[in-house]
Length: 371
Image 1 (cartoon, rainbow, N blue to C red):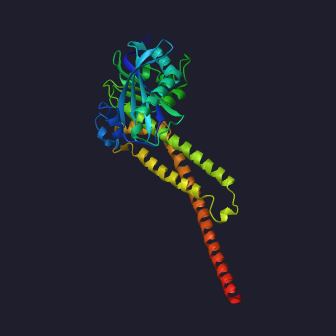
Image 2 (cartoon, helix red, strand yellow; image 1 turned 30 degrees about the vertical axis):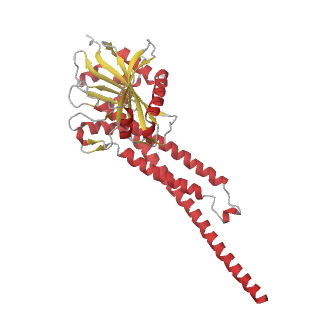
Image 3 (tube, rainbow, N blue to C red; image 1 turned 180 degrees about the vertical axis):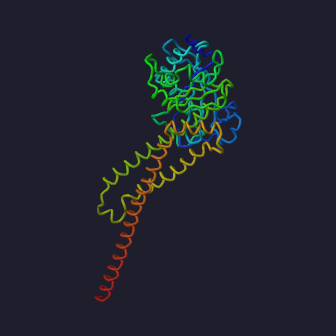
């Protein structure tokens, strides 16, 4: 006898769009600018005190908006969250109709993963946030790329299945991929998508993929989605600085090629301004890496720490961090070469000045003799 279909009685979809909007955001000043309703992120699960947030992100409500979907517009609750390292998230809470079964949930997930209407709404909202917090921002900008992440958050399923039963009865790989095709996925693909799965009790489940997650949490705790958002913001920042480093290294190459030594190069190095700019970039980069790495610190090996560390690996953050570190080292070597060139030109200028003074001294001596 076939098992009864799963019925999701209470669920919603959290759609995150995270943008880089500044070099730094003063969160306390932003809280004063926004309203007294703004709140700092605080994890509520047992032992969560071993996940330290030195400067917790600041969240505030943006009200309700209409989001256009295939089956008609839906009303979504919108929250914004700010991070001190310059990232800002727009979170759209999309309701899932009560008594929804698995196939409609997969169809909704598939639509939300690549929704143009959602992207446009998020861009409109982030612009309003930027204007709202302008006094608390240093180095304002809006990078033309963003990070998206989607969490299917389920609080109640008919029959209250255990995590093991849920894994057996629901093809969660299709949910996470938004795979609406009825043709089954291969066992290897299903295992690859769902390999990062966690349960603290027999009745909860978190399955984490690189751009989406399925969280079954009867308690209603939002700790895991919050941690996924922190990791997503870190990923965005490493991608942004990787982009900046690529641009700066390319600019150095172009300027070195363009600024050939001429007669004026004997008096002043053409690379002096470029060396100063490179040093400034290195200092800013060191400060950025420290802020991002300190945005969340793990003390101890408990459930939330395991979930967070798995999320970081699944999102490939270590690979982006390694890329930034490698380019940082390359930039430091380039700065050393530029500084060496500037120092050489400065020494040459000094030597030429000394020779010129000697020649003038000899010339004046001859003039005195002839007089």
